[in-house]
Image 1: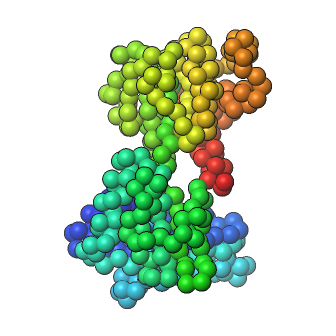
Image 2 (image 1 turned 135 degrees about the vertical axis):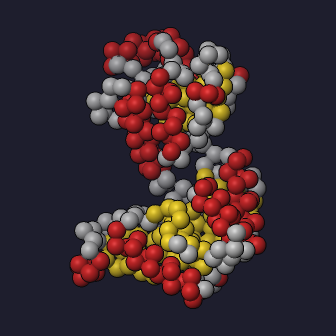
Image 3 (image 1 turned 30 degrees about the vertical axis):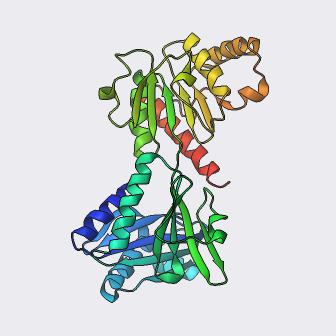
Amino acid sequence: MRNMFKLMNEKLTAGEDLVLVTVIASSGATPRGTGARMLIGKDGRLIGTIGGGAVEFRSEKIAAEILDSKHSAEHNFSLTKDDIKNLGMICGGTVDVFFRYIPAGDSETIALAKEAESRFAKGHDLWLISDIANNGRMALWSKAGGSFGFDIPDAVLQSLSREPLRVKENDIDMYSEQIASSGRVYIFGCGHVGQALVPVLSRVGFRCVAADDRPEFADKKLFPEAEEVMLIDLDNIAESIEIGSEDYVCVMTRGHSHDTSVQAQAMRTPACYIGVIGSRHKIAGVQAELRKQGFNDEDFARVTSPIGLAIKAETPAEIAISIAAQMIEVRAIRSKY
């Protein structure tokens, strides 16, 4: 979404009309769920996707019509048996898509895009609210920055969650979606797996911080996609890093003793995910040591070890993919609560 806002600002400033296409409701086996977006310009799709296939193709055609009519609209794709046949789909369900027309040079949207970039850069938990009842005008909300764009009704603010939601009551018809999280992925250990993991996670929207106690490894040149690279004392993480409830922890240091130390410190934080690299034999040894420090089964239940999905990964690149896949799953599950 951050890149979409940047492109939106660029195109509107250059004098191009746009249509922001958003899936605001979906059910059944649809190609993409609620919150999928794409940006359409005079030459077609610019960025994003709502799932590809016939629904996206039809939506691009409707967006082209919106560019001509210059009026926002909502469209429902009811993928019944006949619709599936007509659309050439292999899945059923219902998709509600909102097409928001944005005229060239629109000062409100340009200002919103700039404010969004500022809040992305600050690492806010950030929501985008679209006023469906009023031509899809948009607003931002974050706890640190409050509202930007228009005053958001209390009924909508009270409903904000990690899951996209449409609020329709009285004269309110608004759609809210969290588009950025304050959570970061703290990767302790800047070796081969860490170096392979950061670019994979960054590509799927995780904000990565790589940390090590070795200057030659805690090097930004090794982690160009990381938000930050830190040289820290692995035995005293809290001195440099505060891990919160939205944060993920990946432990992959150069040795068992450091992994044990970092894992112990991570389990004392409210991190939403703690993954530790290593064999099952190593895990048993680490747990035995940590039990001596007072940790119990409830503590260990918070830890995923071996880290990553069991796909028989061997190389650093394969391991990175298994870890990223697992974290994508964790993020998706958390978005439902």
